Length: 83
Image (cartoon, rainbow, N blue to C red; front, top):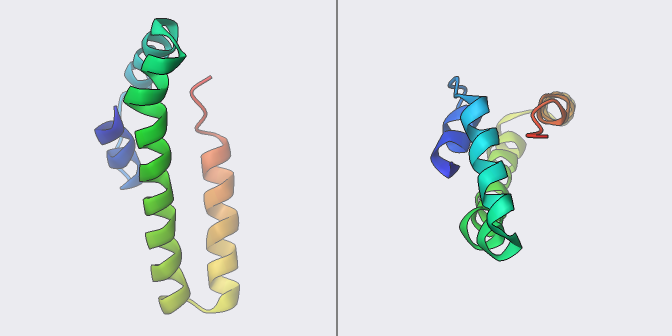
């Protein structure tokens, strides 16, 4: 699952229905299973992704360009919930 999320963040198309089904299966297995196998690694991966993205953005874009990028990213990610 984490590999698919990473691929999607890199701009590749991924089977979102598979991610949703796997996420639901882990959640039904219990909060410990979901947390240990997906949630904690996903949060750690997400922190690293956005830290790296911010470092690159701050060092290569103007302030206005970076803020536009952040707004665009927030908009894109608000539409990618697995609910």
